[in-house]
Image 1 (cartoon, rainbow, N blue to C red):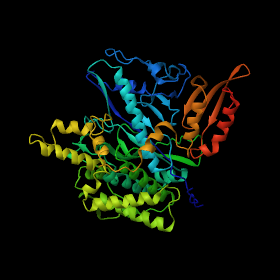
Image 2: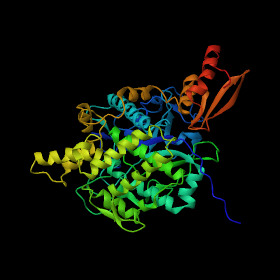
Image 3: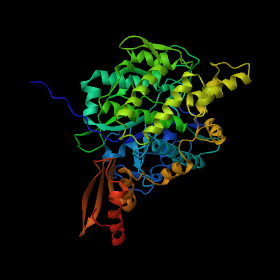
Image 4: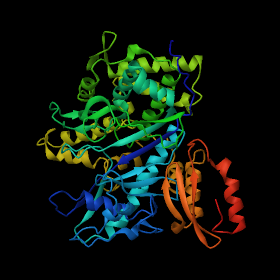
Length: 524
């Protein structure tokens, strides 16, 4: 009996992001580096509700968790967390923020920021910039507690130029049927998606001096992540990194219809145009996959090889072999995907992608300029082009410098420093050279308020509504409360399984009614 084809459900392309930051203490030497102390000092300065209060009590501020004495380091008893169970080095000290519904934690000695869920690529760009502002404020506060001569440095990048790569991940809500098609049923869907992710480095890369992970030497390359891709698909994120990550973690309760695609291939970028485009184009590509409308002529044959070939060629001339024959540059692969997306838009539209026409126009203009090698026209939109321009000016100013000079590596690293007096990106933003695709008002709003059109709004309101002692546990899809009722303590679970539900419009009246009652111990 033939197997009936699965009908893919049309899902709004809700998106989240979590990105690790480079962090260390300048002026302090440790054999194993100062990342552990720097990341924990930063986390301690961010107000949040612990993800679990079971074993150590609740605090209104994460600052209660440790103290820095300059020589002995930051005093944490990480092993006592989570009921004394062994902690996960990739998720330590996680807190959720009542201000905007986001989350912050320590991942392998890096401060990691996770934005609240949003629907729009433009909101994702604004929310990501907001999390950087929160990290910057934590940096300023933490540095006030350090001894003279020491300061915590925080970098927006994915590599320390010493063969250590850390992630900047996106995640997208898709139907379970589409997830199965990509990762279990239709290998040509996986090939198409991976080809898009790799070729999009031409606008999503931050740029990097030199090569790592045993790859061939190069002066300058487009992507900070490309050297570390070693396989096409896999669940791992810290070794043999896959181009398409197959981690199956929905964060949607036990819903059988929803899935979350975890994307680990993109660089951490600062230009808002690059952030809007890499997220928006990915939303559109996933909508094509969901509609079962892809162009297999876009698919690259040797994906791992293409990652290095394209990244190591900032001239954008390198071509790779396609599955169905012929060769193509990254620009040409992207153009094929865009043309197919435009045709789909004309026939069916992209109802699940907010502001799809604006994203398609940005995509089209960017590829047109790249094809014409109009780098001047993209210096304020694409990080790797801006960084390359800065580094080339440094080379022109000093005859004693070349691409292998440590001074170039230093400039590469501080491009993304959060310190506005040090980071090379910020003067170009302030001067107006960098395009602003999201407003400063939108960024600041996401510092203090959650998005109103996803469950992040209700999560933030719960964290504001109840005291820290009443909040037993917080996760993306569930909040557990411990409340006093009739002289006894009872546990209540609030399920937030639907990431598209629990918006302000659906939940506000409930919070208003309980507030008017004035009962801080009211049952949820």
